[in-house]
Image (cartoon, rainbow, N blue to C red; front, side, top):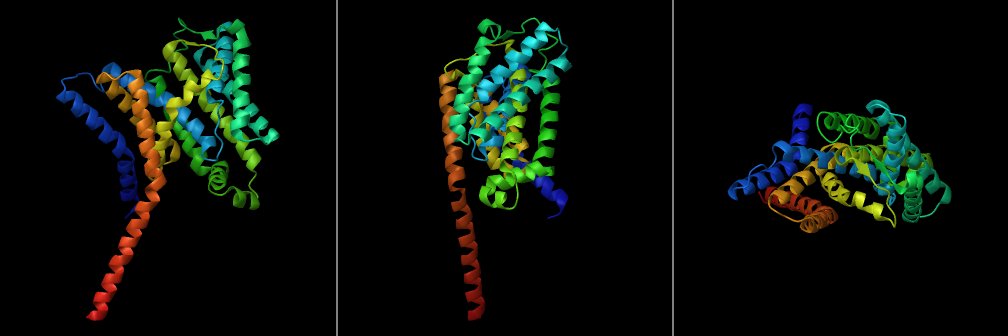
Length: 337
């Protein structure tokens, strides 16, 4: 198989899941006489869901694949926008300075999270729970718990719809693929994910790598909340760990992306998983499913992918056994002849 054929095959395999899901809902809606699936405003909503959940899922995967579950994801998002949004509002910033300030604030919050995790040497779940409560409290204190409202600032709220949303996710995916697959940091991160002890024994600095992971995650989360506020116009402070609701829909893209990743770069695979989730959500809404039904179905799909990924090695073993058996039978046949 030449390189061009392999690339085409990988592209095709990467797009199989979203294509099958889209065709399923398109045909089902046609049969039931439901119009509007995947076109017009429905397609725009699909794109919004894909970009928003995709950014969160990629950010979570940065630490999760190295064994660090960050419970402060939602709190990081809310706090970064409450700070940067109020700065933009108070100083009448344009859209470019607003984006830069948002990214900077997200990076600083991520840096704090990474340094605290490395310094305390506690399990990441414990550290992130504490940080989530602290970030929520800080967000609640800013502007007398009013959060941030940018309704009416239409020049800033452009990232929920094309073309700005498409440009944003395209730039993010290009940068993440470069960081993931073509930098020393990306190589070291993969090495730490596959075998931390071996990686540290050969000289990889796990603490430095972890801090950089948190910084990149903070940047991506700040962009995710930028997309969110562009659609809804406001972000309210959270308390009692209610900020965890921000990332509950990010698990399905990660699991779908885990299946697709063998054919594509991980960030792209996760975004394809997020787009698949957007198709599923849009299709179920068209079919009249309630929010609770959507939650249940998402949970079931996550469970199916967990079962598949946990048992996929058995399929490989069965294939290898079948090949060995075929070779053994062929060898016996040749000897008998």
